[in-house]
Image (cartoon, rainbow, N blue to C red; front, top):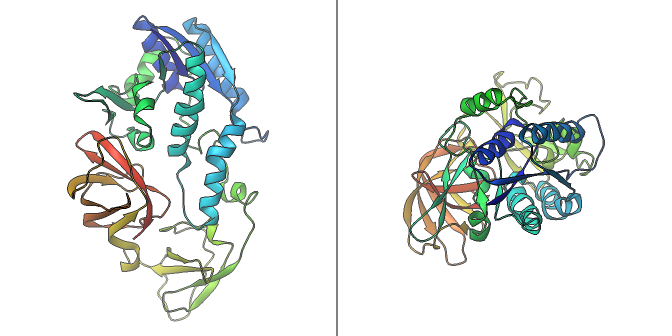
Length: 354
């Protein structure tokens, strides 16, 4: 069948295209340039040349598209609103749903493709009733967390050729096939924006709103730049010097008091204010039939967290109350609580409060 592969210029998407080509599919590449700012941190030009080199090696056509307007409207504006509201969003989840498997999938279909393939480490499994999303077999690289918000129709059209592979195997395949990106470092920056000094970048869009840094008993320790620039559990960048009468221990962000524009900090990595067992979410997005009764599951409250045993209580308005078996540290509103049963991803929701 005709498959369009989203080529980023990296090794993962390159090997996805390689495997599909070897399987006998008609493969075409699609490079998305969705961030238009030209600065020293932008790698779009280099990434595009790498994608072209991969396509030359594999003898497949490459299409270039620009969804910058859609990205700004559907992902980046949300990203900024969440930070301005004192939350810490994960834009990659929305980027997958709205851009990669949204407008990009639509473009792939206009090219006559039956599937859109990416270099995600995840598995799409044909279940008895519908298509299921499962973790990639490489536990260190599994990216199902970022894909949990896909609609069933998007998941049905997806293809994840790397789901059964480890990262080491992917690099070996790329090297043996002579792909020019076999040793290219992984990108760890914001989806399409790349790696850059985050506070400096955020400060271009969000104005400073200074306020007090305080202890839980309201002892003032300093001044913060603006609540948007801090996240729960953060240790560095607080600019708190020695405090008379207190031990010289690190300070951690424990809470944001939005009405008072106050950053609350504590000492001790596992201070009680940094721990919780019950997590409340916004309305959930399900990849299964929405459950009505409480059920046991595993949850990830941030990417790369190990599975945490929990009990999930669906509420009448679609929200969830998640009771974790063990206390969780620095649970952050704006991040996603993603639920699993074994390797299968059940769905997830934005964390609202603890």
